[in-house]
Amino acid sequence: MQLPAIKRGKFITFEGIDGAGKSTHVAWFAELLGERLKPFGHQVVLTREPGGTVLGESLRELLLHQTMHLETEALLMFAARREHLAQVITPALSKGDWVISDRFTDASFAYQGGGRGLPIEKLNQLEQWVHPELQPDLTLLFDLPTETARQRLSNARSPDKFEREDGDFFEKVRNEYLRRAEQSPQRFLVIDGALSIASIREILSDKIANLLDQSIANG
Ligand code: ADP
Ligand code: TYD
Image (cartoon, rainbow, N blue to C red):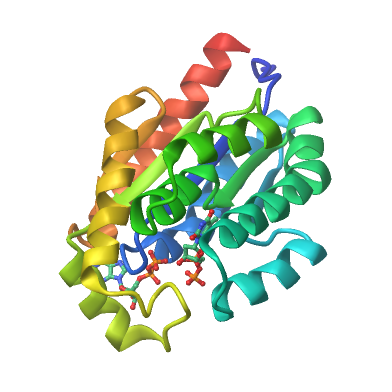
């Protein structure tokens, strides 16, 4: 029996405050999606921000470990993103691959905008400049109270520049993520990070089934 065609790849992003649980699932999600897409002849590209290219990974080192002016931080995030789009995201989507990015522009709105207080208008301008046409097809937002996220992180790893910020900063980051999710309910799926890992995987696996059904229906 011939399989129905899926023509277009989708762009999926993972977001959330540090410690909300995104890294626990992103590679698993990419692998499961890749298996499901194989019969249709599509591949999954798993990437991350800041990073995803040689230049982007160098910028990530600076961004995660050096103190800098807030606008410099925002500009470098978008500079890394410009390269990421040119070298990885756009070419992959153009040939029909699916792209999963561990963070994208919502993180700039949440961290540089919400957390650090850069005016949203400036971020809108950068977004307009760097990717006027492209938005993720789906954004999985891992949401968790900041105190729980902090406790989880304290057991997990040594903190980078962002992870050393205080609870108030993460409260603002979280609120900005939730505000954006409310603004674009079609694009966001908010996942309760307090659920067990197994329950979250069930939700993610249902979402993959749902995405494939949609893609088959729409080509
Ligand atoms: P993030 O990538 O969002 O910063 P991680 O996935 O690294 O967060 O998770 C932070 C810590 O919390 C890790 O030690 C991880 O094992 C743990 N963790 C992740 N998800 C859950 C969960 N649903 N329940 C309990 N602990 C979790
Ligand atoms: P993250 O992706 O969470 O990596 P890890 O799980 O290895 O810590 O770390 C990237 C950090 O960069 C995170 O604290 C959020 C921050 N960030 C921004 O502030 N703005 C952005 O636009 C992006 C993409 C990330």
